[in-house]
Image 1 (cartoon, rainbow, N blue to C red):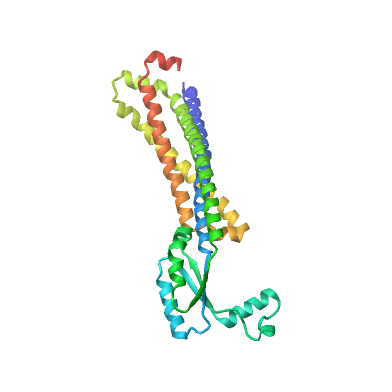
Image 2 (image 1 turned 30 degrees about the horizontal axis):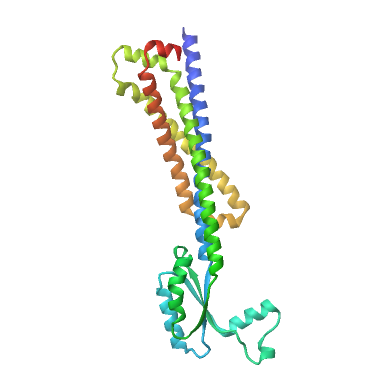
Length: 292
């Protein structure tokens, strides 16, 4: 009898370990989905904030007018950063790019001083550019305003298409993940279906019967979530050490959203799946449980 009880205990432990490993693998898949979506959003914002608007200044603008214009630009809602490029510096940059100084054969440099404006990500779209740029062109001391309108439109369109694809993939993988966790919990609880029927026969309340199963599911979800977080973090750390460019995109916000989502998903999915799996057996008759 003792040997049989010991064998049953070992079988239950192995079943719980298997269910925890299965749940961990599914949560890793969910974590990859969340991390990819967060990275795509961060990459989109980074690209948009690298768009620049070049405000070309009139050669006759005074230092006071230039300073006043720079102050006004910094106050604009679309401005993330403003950098002043003097006529001499712009000429030197152009000379390094072309390999020759245009002032040598023209007598003077045709390149004006300018302000380089880095846009906020929310304003890097053609609607905002069409709204604010005409007003900027009318400002005193401004000769012209140059901005990559076609490039902005192309990038926004590409990211919209990528977002739709990612959403479809996330929905499909989310459905698969939910199905896998649900099957894992159903198999785990089905092994104890006779215990559920015995507790029903002695008159135990359904809430009392559910409690240990839900508690076990919460513990499993938490453990699986922490294990999945550890594996995901190790993979991210390895990628960051391998590629410094990748590391610049992995912000604390991205890590926090990914890790938090995995733990929350582990708790909620295991709890919900366990609840409905237990209810399934509670509604069964003794005969149905034997044949299940």
